Structures are given as C-alpha cells and as structure tokens.
Image (cartoon, rainbow, N blue to C red; front, side, top):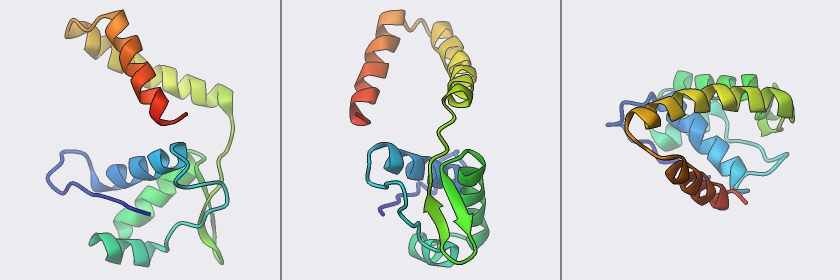
Length: 122
C-alpha cells in the first residue's frame, strides 16, 4: 500500500492518511478483507506518530470502511449503509457547491468535474 503524506499541507496528517486509504478502496487497490498494516508498522514506514495512525484507523472504523480486531488488526470491511452515505455526501457537497457558486463555477463545470473524478473509481 502506497501512502504519500504531504507534511507541508494544511490538512491534518491523520486525514490525509484516512483519505488515501478510502481512495485505495475506491480504486480497488484495497479490497474487502484486505488487512491494513499494523499501527506501528505504518507509522514507522511513513515516519509519523503511532497515535496519528491510530486516529486515522479509528475514523475509518467510525465511518464504516474498516473493522478492527485485536488479533487481525484493521481489515477493510465496508459497511454498506447507502442511505447514511448519501446523507453524508449531501451534507459535504452542499458546502462544496456553495463555495463553488461563490467562485462562479457553473453547474456544467461541476457535472464535468464529477464525471471526471467518478471515472477514476469505476
């Protein structure tokens, strides 16, 4: 699993890690049942604090992307609650679209961007 952290980014390291694992699942680089590296192993590989990895894994568990087992560690196990996922997506998109409207981004530009991004995950 290839993880690239931008230490100069304003985005928190645990969120960068969380988002990259989610993108790995969406692009099928990580599949249902795949184990993630141990907290210690991933922290050492990336060069970050173990608590940061632990926080990312905790967020992934809360959001239904992994389960955590004391013996097996973190394992990709997607909780398919589509209604909840759509509600969360709508909340996130509402703010993003409002920002885009303030910057004069058109509906057509948004649709084109969504189609472009969605192609990466299909």
